[in-house]
Length: 284
Image (cartoon, rainbow, N blue to C red; front, side, top):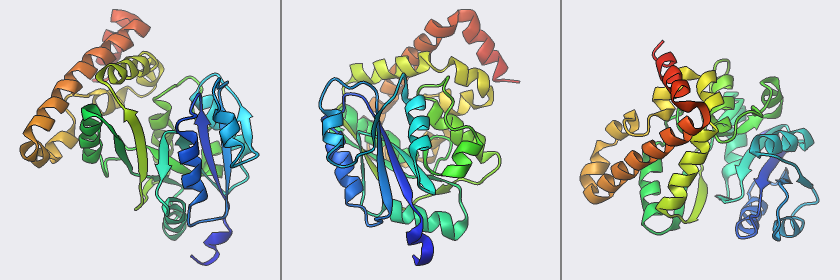
């Protein structure tokens, strides 16, 4: 690794009532093969034991709201590392994630990296989510960049405070117009617990209702990211549907339901006329 071991990495995690997840996440950070790092926890008024557990791992536990973008930017401001990694409490890092990111970023001069994610959880819906996420491996229009050179993060203004949910796509997209985005060889486990269809659809409705600003900001991405039913990734992975016909059929049915809930959430925010205007603008 040469002199890269001297580069400090700040691992930033945002939390809200995450006592069931935060210990597992922080333990995975502690077990990283790369040791020159700091942990920053930015909580949003948790009512459970989240902060108490976090303080066992780091003294840098803060409180900030009202939403995830503000929490993340605040954490980045507190970071002293050359690089920052922005993560969620329901994640778990495999042991070489940080080391691999440092090696790739420095050997190829990347300013931003995607860290692939693998879904894990209980129940059939989690299995469907895993089926879906596997299709997005290597698709930079869907995968989320989480590793940033801190100077570049602030050069582009960090996360847009007007976005909640789509901020994950907005910042890397803006950066990609100037810098090529790389990809880690390691991966993150994303624990979705006992995911139910009700929870999945509610989440889709909520984020879509918050997505009107993003849609107006990047109308050219609507048919790439907002199109849940007909993505190129499904065609590229057609063999998966042949090998797992029932799982594939269930996946498409859930995507159909998600589309209905997402459109409903979006319309609840901008109205029918606003929705029509956004769709029309996406064709320009």
